[in-house]
Length: 355
Image (cartoon, rainbow, N blue to C red):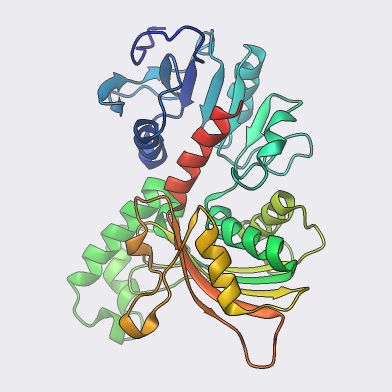
């Protein structure tokens, strides 16, 4: 294997491998590397398929090598973003070679002996990794967990009811491409959204191979994931389980309805929270302002509300529409938007820095 290092070896600085070094997440990870302190030695780029693509690491174009039996020699930390079916095989090889695996996929998130870590919330769990693996939350969970943490720490959550507006990139590049193709198709059919079957007819030539169960252009689809129990989807159940595990609130229901929306990137959420202690919306807003990961955008009279197009490519999550139903002093409503890809990439580096 001929991994091209980034810069010279830096003494005892750890060797890091980015595993699954293609796609938007890898690009976000590379961008985050350039914005964070340079604490690493060699950085290897690895992929399960041969590719001629390169990735810019700290201003240098670097080739991407093929995963093989020697890929993890001398690697200290392996940052994993592989297809689910490949993760166990290669993660076990990385651990056996002496690396700590930080995995962004779903394989290990709910395993009892693998910590599920959201930096800034439960960093202390990074050290307890009996299998040599640290897992990160899913992209929809990233959109919720920071605000949920602030609410639970300040007012003790009793219930979270969430409507998640999930962008097309939840289905990776395939989802983004399908939405763009559908938007192009319906743009050639003026009035397609005004007649029964119009959007379906306009997109019919694209074929049935879509990651979405219905057309997404000019539409919303209240189904994200696969069928689970009693009418829920797997993505909705995962969101509940991940929030409960991270915040250590297994007794708190997280009632989620996930809706695929025609947004390219960045998820949004409408959140209803019921708390054990009395809630004042102005105090909630102040707590959000003081949180390092949240920005309050809440001046609807002047058109200042959180929207996904305003958070793409940035780290903070925008939160607004903070309000309280009349007569329900333990409840609070809010809306937020978050670039989950960016959040996941910066979180992965934050975890790696603490290993």
